[in-house]
Image (spheres, rainbow, N blue to C red):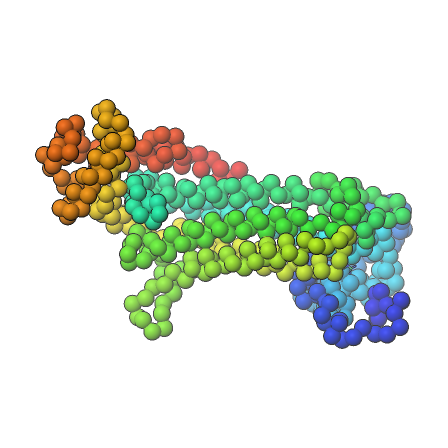
Length: 458
Ligand code: ARG
């Protein structure tokens, strides 16, 4: 059979052009969505008496047969038929004869491809929401066992104040919670139906767009046919959300890498999630978080690619838009892989509680608390800050930590110091004291954990 659009042509397509313009190599991923869209369309054509019931039933039966063959991987796609839409239509006509040619009545590949992508994005968005949920679950389970585990908190990657490790993990929980919310929210816009916009202008047939939208589970129809076939902002939105999500994954990965280094020595990733070196026998490398961090580039690239692709395009469809798919597929695959690994890797990591605690004892991260101590006793905080700065300098010169200084040494700097300074400076006390809402105080973290859990299975 020749080209479905061959009527107007006198020469066959140049082979190189055929290959260059074909998208079947990647858009075959949309095969089942394409059939779903076609089934809804043909149902509507029958309902609106645009085709007879007999024709409708033949086409539906034919589409089901092809669907079965696709599911069993029995079909061979052809580059000559360009894309998934024409491949399936061709298969249909081969299967049921010329009546298969009635499927495309009142429709164009332009609304068809947009419909397929909306269906695909809905499925994948729902799946990704689940996968983000699994990462959150792993964070919650680790946080639960580490509410009272203390480690240094950092700013500028310099030890700042001791914090609860559970608190640190929950920080990521909330980032992922917002990612999940963004994905959820985007479904509102993914659930617009382009079907029936036809090539760009609508169709003279008396079609029922609401009916196909309902069958496909869309919430509304695009009110403008040009917009319906030209818009790819639902993909841009997905890529933007994905870029933010992979940023969070990357930052967490970076911390896992740092924490598992000998320098930090705060966690150990399970052997299952690490690899060795072909030359250095002692190595246990955090390849997985490194790759997760590295995958960020391609998702940002996919976002930039599509933004750039769309920015100068006049309405309505342009062939450029065929380039909208690979970045979308790649982003979905990349995120599925990343999230599926991140969850079990987090759940199985060993937290080195005593190493974390030792780290906290060997720094000056309780300095703020001595300043607060003096401030509570009436010294203006700014002045207290300076006094403590001097004490820290003195301690460093003496090769001591703040808890090692004697009360006499403290009193050289201020008469306000009394014995109770030592309990104020103990790391547990320093953390517990930060009981302001959302702070790292243990009570706050326990409350936060409950709140986090309540978001897990909504
Ligand atoms: N394969 C095409 C794409 O993905 C489908 C739409 C083609 N429409 C057209 N008028 N050439 O963009």
